[in-house]
Image 1 (cartoon, rainbow, N blue to C red):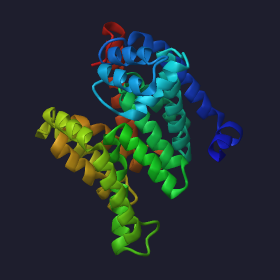
Image 2 (cartoon, rainbow, N blue to C red):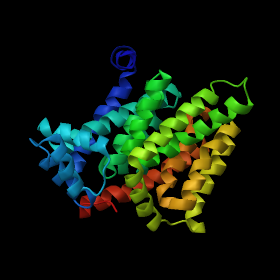
Image 3 (cartoon, rainbow, N blue to C red):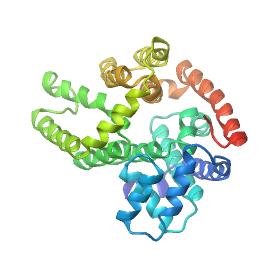
Length: 321
């Protein structure tokens, strides 16, 4: 409630305007993105109206070859509220843009850079139109990391994010490793995870693996079969690591941040890792000069350029890939 009050009453109305702008623009452009994964998403969404939730999940899985229950809940609620799919997910796009604007403002990033980022960044625009399940997971993850203050409630929200899209683990696993290191070897350094928390975290992890083992195993081998872990695909990850170490105030944290991604790259390849490497780079680079540094500006320009072709392609062909 405090966060909502700050946004509506005490917050910067620019952030709300950003969310509204993204909502309107993506609602209009979504009418052109009708092919690829969106075929299954649209069929699933329209088929959920008025059906029993358990049956609805079976219908959902028949159209979308995955079982992320949280995305299904969003689709089920939207469908049964009789909200058009494009309108419903454009609203989620606006929420995502609003959250990014709030986080960037907390980091004192210049507003024009924030606006450019949410409107033109390739990875963000892909989430607006194509990567729906990842978008829902990122919304849940950002809410847990930046807007939930209670530690145990935060871990619960992060577990929901992982259940929505397991790859989001890469975005906070490094921080967990860093906190464990501090808890075991650097007692005088800030918030850390000690042995009691570590045992509890391990128990939660084991329980999570037990519940989702079959699905996680299927998903892993699906990703592994499409892995592109050649040397050329390593370049974006290596660039993000180098730039993060250059800009990071806490070099140790930057190193820990990338350990899970390096492991993931070895198993799953660059296409599953590069987006998360870029997000971690932003974590370390955005605080430097309020985001007006060569690393952030250069990558923003590059991904803005890529977005032009992505949007052009789905307007002309119905999908961006």
